[in-house]
Figure 1 (cartoon, one colour):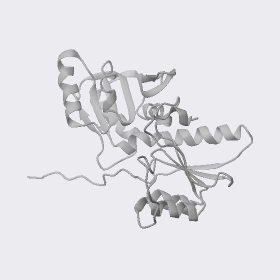
Figure 2 (cartoon, rainbow, N blue to C red):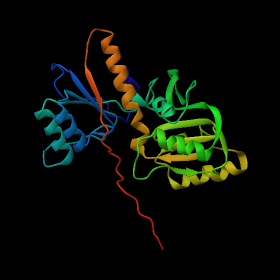
Figure 3 (cartoon, rainbow, N blue to C red):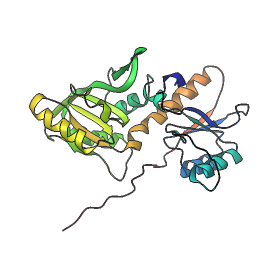
Figure 4 (cartoon, rainbow, N blue to C red):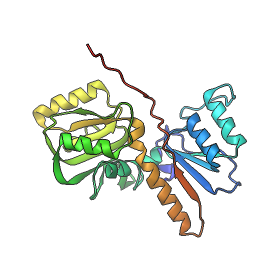
Length: 264
């Protein structure tokens, strides 16, 4: 479903730890390989933990148990829990991370990649499609907030709340590299938008047209993919007569846990 060959050259995907010869009956899906998720996997009796984000994206020289990542590796290995990562290869898959995000925020029709993959234009980064009926930006943002898991930061919106939107572009995870490709959309929903690219997009859009922006939590934009991946895996295995039990972690692993506003 998520060919490792589709991953970016800088990425780290595939089996991180675990004995390939051991049987797998229970599979937990999560966005982040963090301690809370590892504890959930162990408590549930998972044989395999599939995460979107890599544990060691930039490599390491140690898995010592007195480091956070080393302790996680020790916890998994001691309990025979394998760890497998599908990151940018899941981003560009069809269906992949952005397909699930698009469905979560209300797109029901055909979806197209924002940045098609050179070797297969049907795959690629981001998705763009049309809502069945136009809505205001305010209504779209409220719909997106209902469709995505709750996080401390919620959604940030840039644009006229009364603006009518129909064409919607989305990208799971950090998507400001796709701002230029989303220019034809009425709204672009992604995560981790930085001040200057967002400001320039909104300002230039006032003169030459461009999308409104909705900035969600990174974790929240990728979480909808977990259910889709779990269903695809279990159904494809069932078609071969192999039955596994899957579970989607609902542990919120967004880095931001609260917000504060000056009341004066």
